Length: 339
Image (cartoon, rainbow, N blue to C red; front, side, top):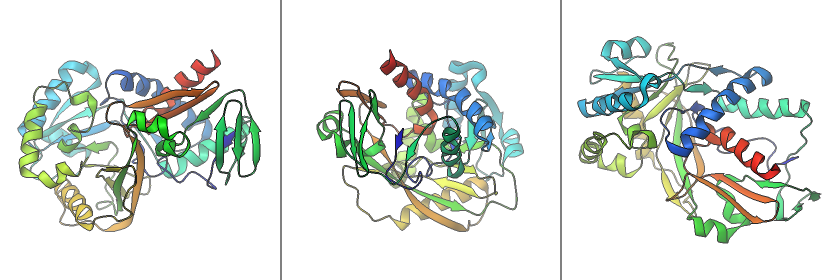
């Protein structure tokens, strides 16, 4: 049984880029990501939702960014294919400052606005029960108290994302879990051009653990810190994915706190729009939608997996890579509980 407080999934699962960013992870996250990849592909076929095994293009707009990608290629082998400017231009429209890039063929894309809904609908046919619009009020060994009554269970998994502190505040405080807010936008696609891969930028190199071992990354960090101190301070991960209808999902900035201010900053949206337009070589982009994503974040761990009571697991991806890793993490958690 799945207990869900809303009528449908409206949280981080539908507010993201729909990007399975598998290759750019490292360590435990890379293991979970690679375990999640075949599950995503299988679920797309069984549940019938749109999925593209289109990879990711990481665009280099400076020589130090290209150097990072060359070092990443050396460490990952055939998981990374280096691109020159013409190779990048064959895959997407680009601005004048693009000097090359890399293609990560293992990555995937889905439409997050349909994937969660269609997975839930498919699970119904597999015997899973859902209690929608139902709030979990209290959780203890063998029992979940909800707004619609009590539910008994031998195993309880608390997967509430950034709301761990609503149920187990001491655990959240010990792990340093806070909320991270993202400003994201949907813009009109450029001139009916199909952009099949997800697209990352030099700012993205600062956000994914897979690039941290590259010696040239420090030069990228220092240069971007001098050229764009406000964007680095805002935690910009300049990237986009194209939706099936041709529009682009673009973003994103990162703001942290236990309690987030409800106000978004237009200057950050303007910066995202300007950077994406420059990356694509366009004068301006037309905004269709704006929204805020929220996920759990911890300063010292990518995953929170704790057992506050017998038979109860509290699980959260605390690093912003939930779509990429969760289906691998889930297998690990469930198998561990049943064992």
